[in-house]
Every structure is written in structure tokens, then in C-alpha cells.
Length: 480
Image 1 (cartoon, helix red, strand yellow):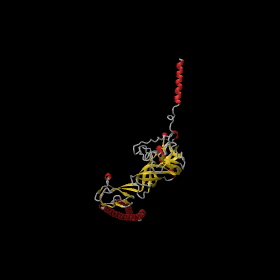
Image 2 (tube, helix red, strand yellow):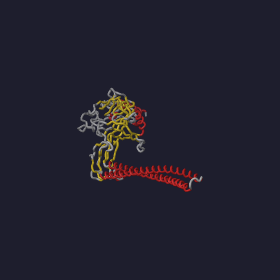
Image 3 (tube, rainbow, N blue to C red):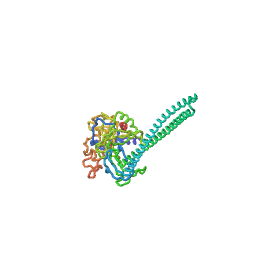
Image 4 (cartoon, one colour):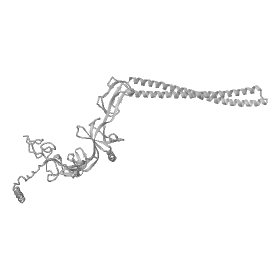
């Protein structure tokens, strides 16, 4: 047993000595090669005045639309314009055959003349009957005086008869005369009443004749109106559309079968209709209370937008979409806006005078809807900077926190970057400065985009970019 233990100890010493004499080159690792600079495009952070805008897609609408229809029927004799022509208010558009309406006017005028003559006749008869009343009243006054005198004489002779101074026959004669004159007075009063009734009848006849004259005058006016409808004029300034009926066609003007002749759209000024989320309605109303809100509309294929102002906010929110409809009015002097056209609309609410602005391409999205940018430092390395985005307008993003004016941020080549990576600033359009295309950074000249040289030899793959920690990423982009 002692011999076996000594042999094992000797073997262990020999193995330890052998291992200590082995070369160390195989255990040593080669130092890592220095990483190549990543070509990037950069932009300088600016501080400038930026408008606070709401952007939307709008639809151009005519300021007013008039469907020109005939108000009387007849043959369409003449069209005084060409399709698509600009017309002014009051311009003659159509002429309908006026002859039936001229005849109706002549008949109405003849009836008016006849009834006017009847009124004159009734007035003459009234004058005659009034004169008769006056004569009857004069006769009544005369007969009353005679009757009164006869009664006095009859009373005096009756007294003389009682005294025996005259004969009975003479007293009876005066009594009879007085009674006769009394009946004459009664007859005169009856004649006066009859004459007055005649006068009232004459006055009623005159009134009826005058009413007939008024009806005739109304008929004449109506005939003139109907005749005027045979010439149709433009009710607005605008542009005519397609002609619905041509010369020689019969125009109908009866209820639902009436004929639309042409549609006129007023395009100067013109509306642009667009919608905004209902959450922005209080902001819009607040800024609109301070003054007019400017709207810019850019038609497709044009570089210069048109300027207008908001003139209408709908009286209700669309419950199906949760949006509110607005309309802006544009003068449209050059007819660049056309009804039915789609345009890009920018509604300017106010202007931020000291906004921090970067290109929208510089802002990257991370985990949990956070956002960050790559800031180029003085040593040509990049730093991952968390930012807070206020809003994005077109190709520019307004930063709330995280950047200051004068710093440089990466706008091209971000997929290849990690925190602390070395970068090489390239001019826009220079080879290697495009993200996702061109020669891979670090590869020799002539390397194909797929990672192989033209001869087929493969090149080392670039390291995958590291994702910044979630805690370092800002919130999602916001709009006012």
C-alpha cells in the first residue's frame, strides 16, 4: 500500500511539470480589430418660428351651385353661351319661344282696358244718381215749406170758420191743400231714399269694376312675368357645365318633369371642406375667437399653395367618425381650385416663435412608444438621446425636450448605428450615405449590396445595431 501511494504521487508531479512547459500561443487570443466608421447623413438642430398646424385632406366645393331650369314651357329657340364658358350675373343664357306669352299679355291688357272703361261708366252713372238725390232733396225742402204754410193757413181758416166769418167750403179747401202738400213731402222723402239706394248701388258697381280692374292689372303683371321667363339669365357669376338641352328642344316646366338646362358653379370665391378630430375643436374655437385662421390648400401637382381663411364650422360633430367639418374660403383668382378636387390642407392655429426643429427622419421609435435620436458628438461618435416630440408637420418634427439648437443629429444611416459607434459624415447623395442601400460600411470598394464582392468572395457581416434601453426612449409623436 505504501508503494502504491508513492507511485501515484510521482505521476502527479511529472504531469504537472509537463503541463507547465507547454507553449502559451494557443491559449492567447488575438486583439480585436478596430470597428470601421459608419457613413451617415446628418442635419443641424434648428430653432425657428414654426406654425402650429392641423393637416388634413380636403375637398374643393363650389361656393354656390345653381341648376338653371325653365319656369315656363316652350320651344328652346336659342342658346347664348358655350359649354364651360364663364358667365356673369345677368348674362343672357337661353331664349324660349315668347309668342304664346306675348299673346297672353295682349289679351290681359285688353281685358284691363275694357274693365277700366266700365269703371268710368259706373262713375258717370254715380254722378247722375247723386245729382238726382240732390234734386229730390231740394224738392223735399220746397214741399215741406209749402206744406207748413198750408197747415198754417188751414188752421187760420178753421178758426175763421168757427167764428162764422167764412164759408165751410173755403175752410175745407185750405185743409185739403195742406193735406196734399203733406203727402207730397212724404213722397219726396221716399224718392230721396230710392235715390240714395241707387247711389249706393252705383258705388258698389264702381267698387266691383275697380276690383275687376285690379284683377286685370294682376293678370297683366303675371303675363309680363311669364313673358320675362322666356329669357333666362345667369343668377350668379360662375362657370357653366354641360348643356342639357339644345336649340329646338321643347322645354318642360311642370312639377317633377321640369327640364334642367345647365348647372352653374361659382368658383370665385370657392370653398375647401375638410375635417378635424373632435378633440381639436376647443383649440380651433379658441384660436378662431382671437382672429381669422389661415388655411393653405395645395392641389396635386402644384408647388405653391393657395391661402384662405376658415369661414365655417359645422354645428355638430359627426358621430360616426368623431370629426368636425370645417370650410375655408379661397378667392381663387387664378382658378387653381376646382370643385370636386382633392387638396392637402394645412390649418394654421398659431406660430411657435422658438421651436426646436429636426427632420422627421432623425426621430426613431423604440420600445413602449418612446422616441430617440442619434446625436453626433465632437469626437465623431454618436450618442442615443431620448426626446419628447410635440408634433410632426410634413418633413419636420418639433422637439419638446432632449435637444438644443446647433446639435447635429443623424438623418440617414441610422439602421447601422449603436450607442458610441464611430461615424463618418457624408454629403447627401454620396455613396454609402443611404440607409439600407449602396455599399455596406466597412466593406472594400466594389462590394455588392448583398455582402459579396464581384468575384464572389464573401465579406464579414456588419454588427446588428443595439436597441436603446426602454427607459431612454421618449414618448410617441404627437400632434396638436
